[in-house]
Length: 94
Image 1 (cartoon, rainbow, N blue to C red):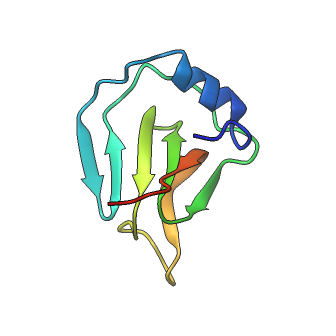
Image 2 (cartoon, one colour; image 1 turned 90 degrees about the vertical axis):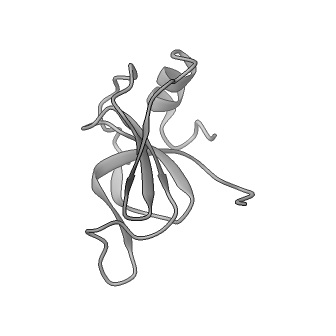
């Protein structure tokens, strides 16, 4: 994880371990059910994400892992449903 992109979100995640939730799939995105983490979109929140980025979705209070296109992705870009706070990237995928 990387606290430089979304420091408030990063700290909120660290303040709520463990995060125990059901994992859901939306296209090539995995996201959790509602979490206890409650952070607003940070100033650099974005919808256009990169493959293998890990994010917090303020609208759904969920953690997300983007490993490919979502149902709303366009022109080869991976799009989140609404702006997300990036908190890290998977470095060594299986």
